[in-house]
Length: 205
Image 1 (cartoon, rainbow, N blue to C red):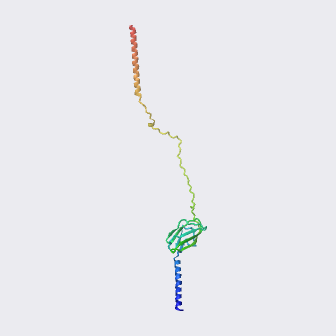
Image 2: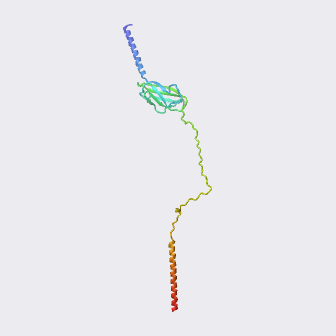
Image 3: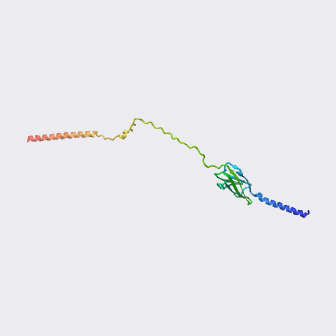
């Protein structure tokens, strides 16, 4: 093998290695899903309030996460909440069964990545309140006061309320009778005197 042939093989090998390295560098920069809660393929007793996804790198752009129930209905209850390389997707559903999580994101190098996984819920959550025993309210009769056979006494009447103002007329009445008697005596005496004078005049004549 000549030196020229060895040099060509060396250049070709370096080129292949460089191309492999350049092709592997962007692939290594792609963000991938590391773990989830609930985990892919797991079975849980109840649907959690949030689905947690943890990725290999910090996300420059908030990813898109969609959770669907067995019928294909989206059960996302509010916007996604990012925390570094972890995102929380709130969910709410009254059904059980298989739930599918689909995610899509843009890596730091601008490459878009997507994926999906599923988990199973064994029991559907119940929003209905637990039944409680009916409350029975028993009315307690109020004891009645014993009735007396004798009639109740009439209400007391204040002597002040019944007091009738009276005028003191005893003195005035007695004085009037006295003057009347005096007047009668005077008039009687005057009349007697007049009669006596008339008789004397008649006799003298």
